[in-house]
Amino acid sequence: MSQIERLSCLIIGSGPAGYTAAIYAARADMKPVMYQGLQPGGQLTTTNEVENFPGYPDGISGPEMMLQLEAQAKRFQTDIRSGFITKVDFSGPIHKCWTEDNHEIHADTIIISTGASAKYLGLESEQKYLKLGGGVSACAVCDGFFYRNQEVVIVGAGDSACEEAHYLSKLCTKVTMLVRKESFRASKIMAERVQNTPNIEILYNTETLEVLGDGQLVTGVRVINNTTNQETEIACTGFFVAIGHQPNTEIFKPFIDLDETGYIKYAQPGTSKTNVPGVFVAGDAADKTYRQAITAAGTGCMAALDAERYLAAKGH
Image 1 (tube, rainbow, N blue to C red):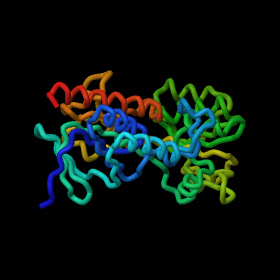
Image 2: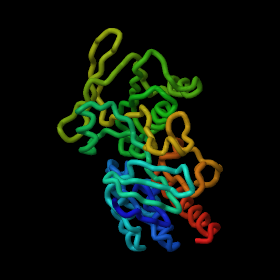
Image 3: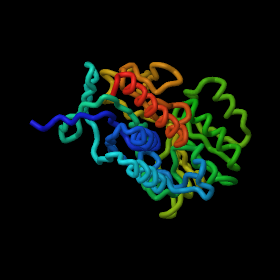
């Protein structure tokens, strides 16, 4: 039987939220241990250029920024480990967690910063250009700037798809919106907003077959009308996927209050507290509204400060 490890602070996940929480927790002498999870650095590692994070006047690549945050957390002696937490038990006063190789950890405080994963269509061509950084994106607010005065395509039918299409319409000469059914899922006001924007063309009953490119950059998409079976090609330099995000919160479900889509609910607005005392949440695992690196970092700071206060009140 392996030894149970006892910790003051365990951080689960390693994006901007997790690393910022680690920096604050380490400086408060909480000796945090972080498990980086399946995607060390989180969603930002799939982002080529980050130009909206304050303090980087020339921009920075997502992976490079995550390495810098990791180095800063290590400088204050955060114990950063590869691997992930596969099971938790928050039913009693001791917060128990297990890693993928069944190592058991008991932590006084836990900061959940497991983030969310963008949903993609899953096409081979889409994934290819996503990995190349050649024109596929799941965040218009992050990447729209790179497509100024160009033509782009966006897939999605909900409120966030409409919001992103509208955002892109201010930067791009033309936005083609692909809606799989014959109507929007979005609220009436959001649907009307895109319908009334002159440079947004909406194609209903339309699905993507393939993202086209020259081997480096996206040059267009091949789509099919699912009622007439007619295929067409649309020229574009950017392909945006706005079909939602999936928060990585499944393992917490039995103990932590989640909303209907799986985002962790704050027990007390304005704090990082969950419904379980001593368990805090930061970043995209609880944020379906902003989903930016800077807001994730901000809530990481809040979670570490809340955890520190919790420990202090308990006399640690």
